[in-house]
Length: 309
Ligand SMILES: C[S@@+](CC[C@H](N)C(=O)[O-])C[C@H]1O[C@@H](n2cnc3c(N)ncnc32)[C@H](O)[C@@H]1O
Image (cartoon, rainbow, N blue to C red; front, side, top):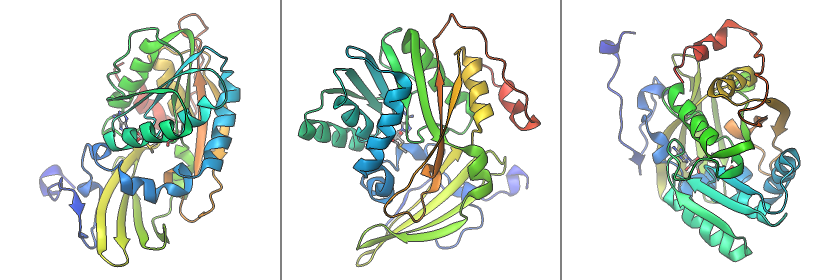
């Protein structure tokens, strides 16, 4: 379909009503959807993972061991959300913990959760592409729980990695935990619905974007008494392990390693969506290691090579 014949992209949030059936999910995706959906409803729809302390504890055990964090180390959790990983990390040692997120609502939750649990964390509101920290500030930077690949073009994703590179100390380490793109491309659920608590249910639709590189999702959240609360669309670029390795390598990281996958086992265990199967990548130390020979496994990721970094 050429551009002129495409329906106009609908940029309005759809709160309080549903659009009804739509032919093409991508046409309804706001380019900056990530500014809108990380709110109290997200904490309900994703509660089976991000609201489950047991899941967070086991994730932090994995990250903590991989990074070998020691007392006195500094760690920034980028896109920290409601601070679940930072608050759990604070229990494990005397670390200097920092968190940054774009959602004011989730940061407020992070602050009150940290206070309640006596965790010392420094939280800031901001955009992961332009970090308010000096160069060489942190021993570790983490990007956890699928907080990457949200932008319209991969050049914007790369900006986050460049900023991480800048704020990490030489010898520091990046750890990413993101959706396994090759798994999701084959296994995403095109339609589902589930009860998320006694009063709310969510209906989901998913499809691949026209470029085949993003998974577009729609969620219609309904309250049993008041009806539809929100009809919203979001997207994530599907990075395979090789593609992410390559992007990280292009930015200049060295000693890139893959550490297998996290397969979430939630109590609700119905539709885990993008959280279902994630892989872990670490990269570092910076600036002094040998260049990783990135494997050329398929033509699919060659598009990444063309990104100007
Ligand atoms: C799926 S949530 C994961 C949150 C947290 N890491 C966790 O595992 O619970 C993604 C987070 O990314 C944040 N985010 C999205 N776009 C962002 C941006 N451009 N800069 C900073 N944070 C962003 C959202 O506000 C949200 O908290």
